[in-house]
Length: 205
Ligand code: URA
Image 1 (spheres, rainbow, N blue to C red):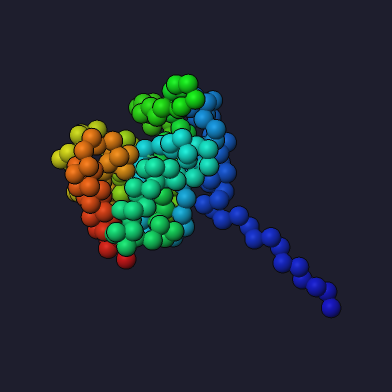
Image 2: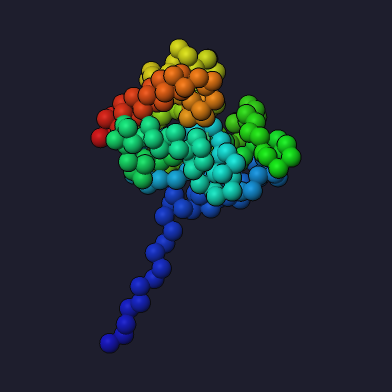
C-alpha cells in the first residue's frame, strides 16, 4: 500500500509573524541591533505581557525577558503562580536601542517615532493572540498601548481599557525595580509587580 508520508507541520501563525518581525526595517534600530526579538508564547494565551524593548541579552538570544530584567519578571511571575509558557510575552519595540560605551551596550529608551513604527507589530500580535488582558510593564508599554503618557506612579496596579475593550493592567517594569537605589524599595516594587501578575493570572483563568 502506498505509504502516506506525514508532511512537515506547517509553521504556526505565531512563528510566521515572528519570522516577519525578524526581517523588520521599519525604523533605524534594525541597523545596529543583532536581531529583532518577536513576542513569545502560545497563540491562545489569555494574558499578554508587554515590556519596553529587548535588552543586551535579549538582543543576543532573540528572546524576550531572558536577561536581568527577565529574572525579576520570572521571580515575580513565580510568586504570582503565573506559568510563563502560558502567557504571551512581548515588547513595545522589537529591536534593542543602545549606546556603545567601550564593550558595554547601554540601554536607551526608544523615542516616540520608534514606538510608533513598531506598533505595527504589537497590533499584529494583539490581533493574532486576542488576549483577554494585557499587562503593560513600564511607561513605554503603557503609552504604546493606551496612547497616554502619564506618569506611572498613579497608574500602576490599575486597569485601563483600550478602544477595543481590552483591559490593560499597568505594572512596574522589572528593570525599574532593578534600578531602585535601596533594597527595601526594590523588594516593595517587586512585590507590587508580583501582586499585579497575580491579578493578571486570576483574570486570565
Ligand atoms: N526589558 C524589556 O522591556 N524587555 C525585554 O525583553 C528585556 C528587558
